[in-house]
Image 1 (cartoon, one colour):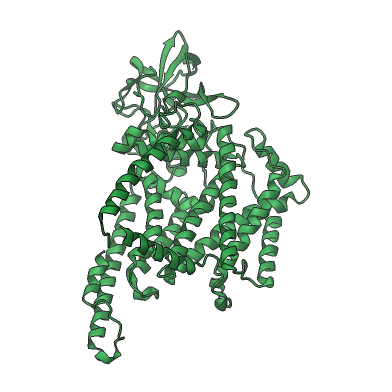
Image 2 (tube, each protein chain N blue to C red):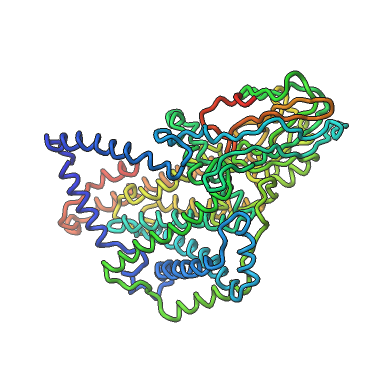
Length: 225
Length: 392
């Protein structure tokens, strides 16, 4: 059994600060693994946030009828811990024309994708679950056959978005939450871009952060707007 | 305090003396194929190390060069198919035999005193081999590799949802250290190569120290058995040239996408669980493996004499096979399946517990009816205490 005599107590009392001190002294060595941090901020990831800027990703004329869609890439740069330094990374996205106008807001984090109402909506195709690229599936029957056997309820039997990895299914017209997850393990709906429509150009000037590549651990999710 | 330390030291000294990692002390059982598994672990491991070193002669560890260099090795270099096949199928065999050996230890109760340390080392070895497997197949830089690496390393970012750890941002830090930045790229490939190589280097040094200090034979297999394994792996390498997949494309996830076979069951579980739990569940599984020798405290080694742990082992085996089949059949209705699985698990666990209690009661009754002379002289825990132990 544990016998706490005076010597044991004193040993334990001196051991704790010694161990703590050794860890404190050695912790900056983690910078070898994560070099772009200040010595005492090994755990922060804010410096690694990817940067984009306004980019024209497509034209509204490509979306004439409801459920017309196209894929695009929004390019960001982020640092990489190797001699090549900064690296470009794509956020694959999808632009869809919905049958009716919606407010493009994510109520879960409060990210606003578009000021006012719009029927042209843009979603990031990086799955908010574990980061695979999900697809826009024009026929919901293909979701049932290809993505594990999920049958949407009657009011959602239209084009859906589905992830090949873990079968999260997203509904682009979900009432009050465009892009919400309707089946699967994803903890939230599809991430949004912040965009404007200038003439017939769709201009993306920000992307909701989160997940890898765009993930400042502790940053406010609406900061990039 | 000192007494506790002394006990711990004594425990460690005793278990170290009884270490048996590659069945090198079980030579009298060699006519039983189950006891060749340890030797097969060592043999396939050595095949993997040698072929791995040979692969490094031609491999180019860059995102632009990796895929082409492995294609080159597989199809152009003389006997490249053999080296790559030996490495791939040798690794598959290593995972298979170490898993079978762990199951044998479980069902035969070999993890009980004095085998606890051997069990823990082998179990940790399996986990390290699986990490080695992920980091290894990422080196091909094909679609399977890319998406496996990305999804696996996104899992730790969910640790930042846990209230206290959230303040530290440690989840993202873990992901970033393995990725070499905030996304998959060249730095990830370099780090994965380092991990993949490093795990085996460190373990092989440890194993050599073990053999040097115990003076035991490394390979307890007959020359014939060894030859059969080598010929078999050569034949498979020739007959089924190791596949390449498609070059990694960060902008497109193919449908369907599968992991290596030993991760398929876990992959299916990740579909059913919220992502934070998908990160915690494997840790719990590893934790269960590490502490099971200390939970199953009876002296019985026969499976039917310890029904609860026997059923838990069967359940794990059934889930491994069942989930693998489900993912191969592409069935995962996330709104329907998890309650069914939870119900089955709960019912089976409760029944196993009841079986355990009933079994112990019956044994206690039998012991009470025996004439006292049949009892061993040494004091042992009273039979009445035993059903209570099942609860712990």
